[in-house]
Image (cartoon, rainbow, N blue to C red; front, top):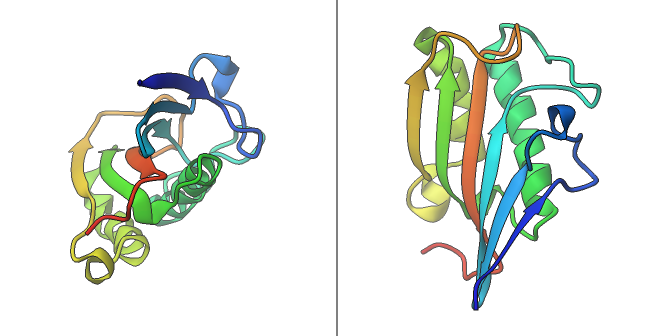
Length: 143
């Protein structure tokens, strides 16, 4: 039996205008697949953190992502796939430094699958990154 649900955990700021769910969850035997909506670097009031600074924004985004995963019994160690939208691929080194620290290849033998694309702009002025994550919860750790 498969059960699907949408969630906005109370420990993470609500999505803008409640127009979407932060997490789509599909429960299956022995675990769940978590698909997180794209996250940008905002504070609890919805203001962009460190406008234009890819490294600082990456830190905030993954802090939000970790909170969403934790609310569903998961963690960054359970991330399967990361999709990143960047307004300038020249910011890739700053973003990659954060990713390498949070997702060390040696820990699991390999980092998550990933796609990174450059876009002309994001929906909030000053936001230079948006990150979507797919993870598992309640399943055996990745080999």
